[in-house]
Image 1 (cartoon, rainbow, N blue to C red):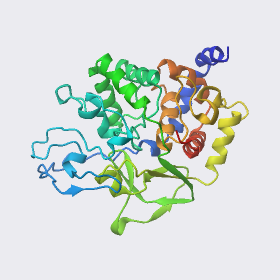
Image 2 (cartoon, rainbow, N blue to C red; image 1 turned 90 degrees about the vertical axis):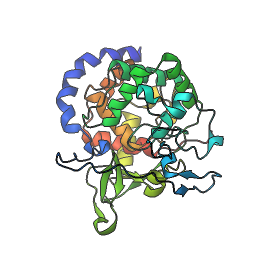
Image 3 (cartoon, helix red, strand yellow; image 1 turned 90 degrees about the horizontal axis):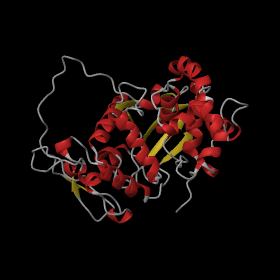
Length: 340
């Protein structure tokens, strides 16, 4: 009965949500890079990078090209991206391992990693219920799941991939990633300042050299790689992220998540389970990256996500303001994930 009431409430709050959404948009969560000037020179194709890279604990060595899923012969052909720890997951389905250049599908393991941990600019998919995973790809295919940020290029790419995938491929990817336990990937730090950053393809990275330093955080969450070189150069699946959040954000988010904020929203555990560790086909969200959590809350509020699961969330997020979204993202990201 509670779920029915939530769904019926969508119509009454939808108009209010649409009016409030723009002012609530967490631009910091999308990290859209500045546009390339129209007169910028594209330059020459860089030469193959055949320098060998390694990672502590891995017995493998891969070239920079291989890490990026590019052939070493300079052809720019796509190959299976580096898999540093194959013992940590099952056998990769063909599309997860290789993608399909003929259909314009990038290997899932390039962006989301073989372990499904993803990065701050995309989604962590490890441990998601297979049925939920399938539903999201269907929603992307139909247009029911989009991004509220037009500059979110990878969201448009995912929609194109979903349209080209067969049902068997969708199910195989869902089953593969569902079987990998989710592990905590981002550390939340409450602070008044954060590193000065720039967007690298939708991921905040600290500035270096003369431009490096800190600046007031304000009402933002700035999520950066704990070790930018390990994350970008090697795509190390053991090197996570740090989310710098405003002081007091975690406690404020906890109050909203557990009590509903005196009617502003609903307690998250009602659908996402105790400790927000999932309930049935409702996904585990504890310990997921703050950037991702914030984007999804706003995308649903702004009407960019309209699948069946998102419909039940619409009245939950309708009355949240921008600071509420920030606080909830900080709290959810801070939650522990029990060892499995």
